[in-house]
Image (cartoon, rainbow, N blue to C red; front, top):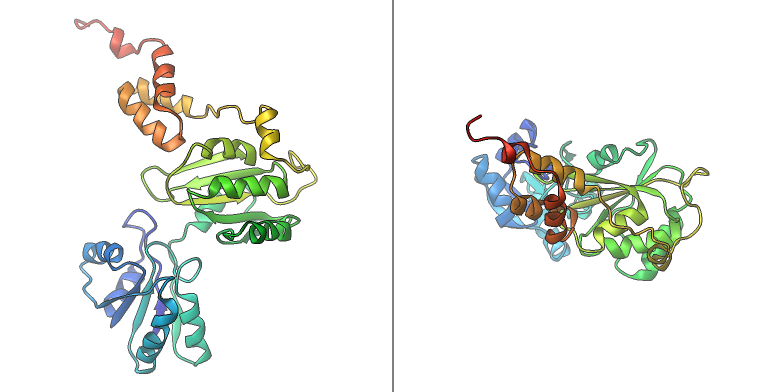
Length: 297
């Protein structure tokens, strides 16, 4: 039996009882990185043989895993995080096993896509998932051109090192649509940056970290901007004014008693804003109540 088993994308608690049972009953577990998967398996006291199965060796491992399945071995496939087979290894093995009439199953469980669609605030019905945008510029633009007239919500997985590039191309093809960048789902620094593509571009142009899902509104006659937008137009037109959404959170953290240094460090990483900008803003705020209270009160 071949079983694709979703694993947590953040909190280790985000795994089903059924998934744990299947992993305990597996004869062999195929995983992207044995070190990453080892953390999860040790946490739940699961000790099974592991074999690496990732994008760089997927085709080489297919014959071995298929032979195991033909012999009646229970093979579980997991990725580093989420549901294998979507944007991680597993689909080719699943399809080959189906073609041979071997027993297969896919368990429900964690993935970043559905939470991101809902956290975006955009309509979840219908939506289209397009995976990671292609590496080559021409292929990337062709993908965006192919989906630009879709009326529903568009969803993409994006890399933190390439998100600025991807959004720049989207602005050229889609225009400045409503969008949301959902980051670090199920992790400590989870956040949803909502606005237009140009606003989000301004947020990520200085760098951003974490696992990202970009959700973009579909074509709509009432869209904010239907014309094509270039990065030059955004900068020259003043639309890339600094996103000040971090200031409210900075004030709350500071008033709650967090130090200027710690507040600046936290927000600088999460919002890609210079630490000195955060510090200057905090220093400009009225004194905190606890700082002005009499020690004899």
